[in-house]
Image 1 (spheres, rainbow, N blue to C red):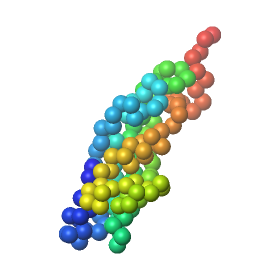
Image 2 (image 1 turned 45 degrees about the horizontal axis):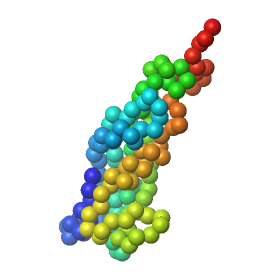
Image 3 (image 1 turned 180 degrees about the horizontal axis):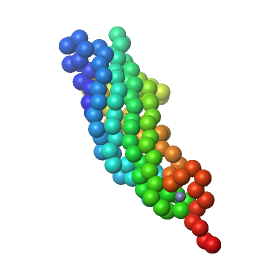
Image 4 (image 1 turned 180 degrees about the vertical axis):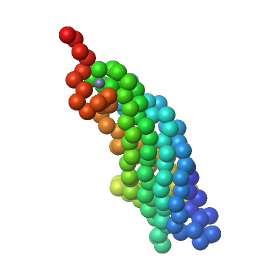
Length: 132
Ligand SMILES: [Zn+2]
């Protein structure tokens, strides 16, 4: 998950798309009793004259585990678009990179965190465990 910016510039590849699979660490899944097996990351980058790099990426994954209300099996497809900027000079708003290589992992991890629902339900109107 790296963009070798210097090399891409040398080869005149200022904009391109990319696609890769990523297995996130278990602690990246915040929903109780659930997991994310694999994340499909699709995106494109564009390198600007000032060496800042715009990255648009979409994360797609299946969140699966137990319903937060009734504990039966549940799953949900999640898709989330994130648009970020990597800059070679540190600032408060953007991701920093050293002007040479971009590691996309922090941006991908953030997209996975931001895209997660707080709970996972087996069906929209799950009433929880039936105690009658
Ligand atoms: Zn349920």
